[in-house]
Length: 545
Ligand SMILES: Cc1cc2nc3c(=O)[nH]c(=O)nc-3n(C[C@H](O)[C@H](O)[C@H](O)COP(=O)(O)OP(=O)(O)OC[C@H]3O[C@@H](n4cnc5c(N)ncnc54)[C@H](O)[C@@H]3O)c2cc1C
Image (cartoon, rainbow, N blue to C red; front, side, top):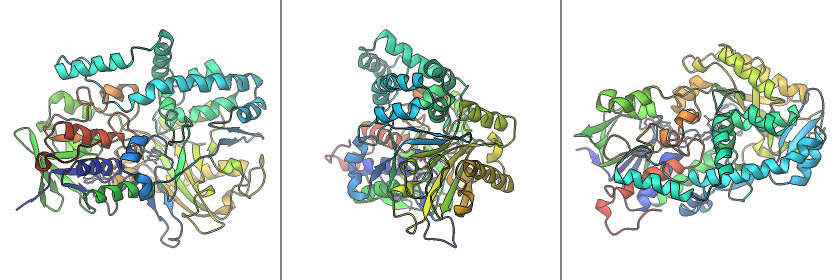
């Protein structure tokens, strides 16, 4: 006899755990099935060096910003260890000398820092911040609503479209124009409209290309910047990011603890190989070991190609939908480099190995937009970037739980290697790429190379094979215009429902993903609960969030 639950969640990444917590909170007997030996997916803390288990790194994702207070509060995550330290400033030390710091919430110090490079840019910055804040007021709340099924004439869909129009009835011509610009422009063109100095533009361009298979001159990158700038960490400072104590795995652990508290069963080493469908409705799943688990509600949080093409099969899906999923763009050319350091980087521009403010935020290697663009062009021409760019952070500036006293962990989120490096390990080339990345930091902080005790280089192949991030894309799919909002993951299916009855979809490949925000998991659970199939065995129990 197959085991039976009210709900099965496939994937124990943070979205799967959020979905399970909400389902169980509403009374559904829920199981999470995770293929790896541990939960967390891309939000994971690990010890990659067997010879030095005392060093822990936040192996893939590294900073928090987009998780809404609704989820944090509903699931009481703070009581399960959710604790985020606000990051310090963006910091870039320039090879030609000097440095720049950009603060999320200190206009006066921003002025001083930027005026060293351009007085005009220093004066423009408050207006830029206000402009972004205005757009965040429009775009931020949109992250929390299921996109309407634009174009559908079904009453429920029409109601959704009208509701969206009504919500936005107060928008002015100028705001709509600004939002349109944001959606269609390149970050380079946008920044050229506002600023003149390459130092400021380099610092602001990074958010436009994070996790993106596009250089700063590609249309659409302005929106990527906004996606990374409209969150806060619950502290009300827009665009602020923070370090979770214990690394990003501790975010997943907190959600898992909440889910278990509501009665969720969490199974690791439990890879799903098939989703069972009878008469167009989901009835359960089959594990790789052949075990069958039955449930009338299933939430998948895997990459769309795995969730739909592998687990359901093209022939069981509507032709248009299957084609959309096959054409889903899922490149990014990201390489994560995790380092254990014997001491903090000693920057020529801001000397000292004592903890300084410039160690507490992003420690960038993106000196100009041209530098970033060159790295992308290298990869698009089929070779790893000769001079990669990096969004670096040193979480141990705050978090003392990751490594022994006196040492530090540094995480370098770097781009780009060629888009097809998900197909082969490219081990020695990745090591050479990491050498070059480290060399770039060494140019501005000459103790850097010598301070490295251990290093861990995770490229697209490992991301795909070990973590299920197909194509190596960090968000289960690119944040490109044709894959946003009502198109994410496919037109007609952006409401966290799928062509299969009872099957819901809540991975980062849905609206509001990617990032460690939990919104897709939350919305998928809400859709399932709204359809009232899942709680039929638990009538009368509390409704979910
Ligand atoms: C290098 C890197 C850096 C990033 N940096 C940040 C950052 O700093 N901040 C941020 O907010 N976001 C960041 N992101 C993005 C963010 O981590 C992801 O968008 C998010 O973690 C995805 O969560 P998820 O639950 O949707 O999917 P995942 O985390 O991918 O979870 C899916 C889970 O499903 C499991 N699985 C796969 N196949 C099966 C199967 N057949 N059966 C059962 N289980 C299966 C996987 O093992 C995994 O645990 C980063 C991502 C990467 C890769």
